[in-house]
Length: 414
Image (tube, rainbow, N blue to C red; front, top):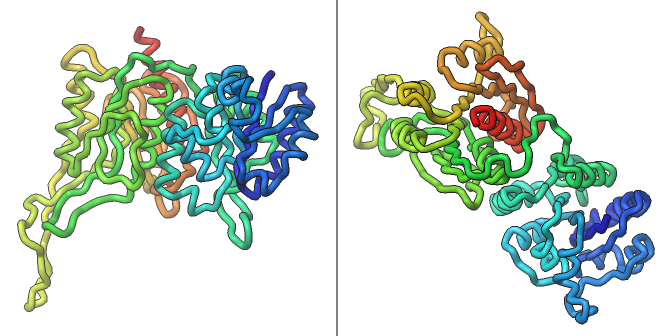
């Protein structure tokens, strides 16, 4: 197999020598393309000695062979490690200002990126958006490991171990996703399908300054949108308050309140093949929002805010579909804590029956769980008799599993 091993300019470049040896010992022909910055950490002599091939990072070397075109065209696999914040950004932007990024634009084989950078860089909204863009285009982007970084810092951003990167690359070439999960869908399984996804937390105004809201960050909804795009779907993304950007390629509809979300969702669901309700909808809203800011009264009397129920959008979407006799596969989400009457899974099973949706994704929430975090544990319940499936990992992992179940449900319908 012809492998392009792109090396980014980070201190973790030294680990990639071990990854290169894994590829060569497995019998693969590896061409290493380091960025100019990468050669300041590990010299070209090292890459040539370990790969047995000449190494260049210039589009002006071997011009007669048109390397910036040929290398990507002939590759069976491209692996980028470490994928620095700069390299990720340039790849997401489609830049071709060196041999490596030019090769990426030409490649039509599996592409795997193994990011490594400081935690603040990994979590920056620009990097989050760039990663989502790459994943939406089919690039397999591993999540970085957590631990000691450069200097005294610790956190998410370490390069995954070379053996893990190698295993993920081999799985990618076999048509599997990076963790060989049985919940992964076949590439392109949603081509020609229209998915509507809701994301974020609604905000219900109390007065012009204050509102009732919740802790939803919108990360799960954005991951679902990226996963659906990666499978070829057209995605209409209806977002309330979110803390992360939407992936490129979605049809974005912005709302604020539950009533606005209801109107947009019921309209969009009529033309959808699937509806995934990942938004955190406020259960209640103030009965009469005040038009001016509520102030502290001199007499010390506190204001009384009367709440009324918001509409049950998930249930209404099911009723709308059933009344029409046909309509989308509908996925609901349940954030449960459990109580003295039942555990979270029991509550989710009851909600699945009440709502009438096809699938229900259970998140167990509480102090330090789910909201705003990248790692999560979810259980997917099926109204049609399949056993519950638990998915532990990143929100991207959960999104991949949910989208796979949606694709399977649509295939079952024909």
